[in-house]
Image (cartoon, rainbow, N blue to C red; front, side, top):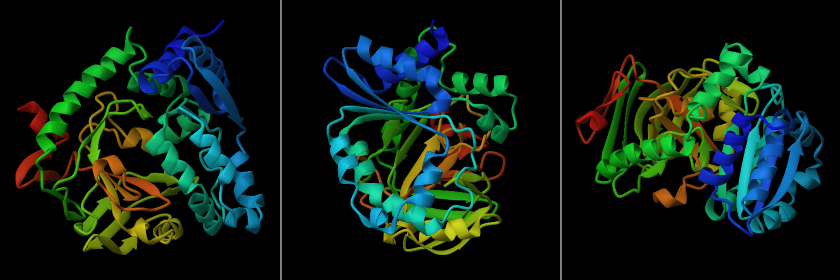
Length: 365
């Protein structure tokens, strides 16, 4: 017997998020910690008339690939993975880590090589498939968030509106609210972020704002676009810790000139920050600016998927742009960093107050 909550979760991912229909080939990439959800996903895909391809990933898989891949493998193109992705209509990724630090201490150059190798696969997935990524609550993730397992599970499922009778309806409601913001931002030209350690200006003139209403990330709740690549000027401090490559980077401060990072420091994780910026030429430029809107996510938990959706926060991503936003920055990385100006600081758009005290002023008018 399946858990009704997990059935609702699977139905949301398969139905609302990826719109699986008859004849669709669906790749399910699921960590073994979410094996209970895996069965619900397979059954949901079959019920929709699709063909599921289930791939379970054991906890040490990424670590093994990083540490044991030969130089020849790291230098070779990921031909098989790319051909597989080209044959897929929809892709569902379920992260359920039993150790958030499994890649701590991993060779950063090897990690960068793997990211470059898989970049064409990731680019195809993003641009040509219906895809969604989600996080299944585990004890390890609960510990990172400083919560009990039960409280964390309630937080995760609540952030997806899974306790509502019709979660998809709630996502459509949030999507409509965000669309109002997208329409108002369509003519925006300049963003100005101000706060402790932050005074940054960047241009979004002519770029397309996108409504992230749960179709690609679950949970979601943001609007975003790609900044003009050479426009960022000034400095910004990210107080919300970022977890990347299995390690934590904290207190990141970046200074931009003509859109490029010219100074970078971190209170913790300097080596990792340097490695990320050295990935390729595009890693030093911004590929995204996003605004969090999810009312059920109010505090960071150490998971970027959630933290960047905190209502009233701004996040900036180093690296790859989303082509649908009009951004042209290309990179093997897309690293979101959260700037929390809710208690101190503000954001102005074209000189007009936009965000202050965690409130999206334009949605309150």
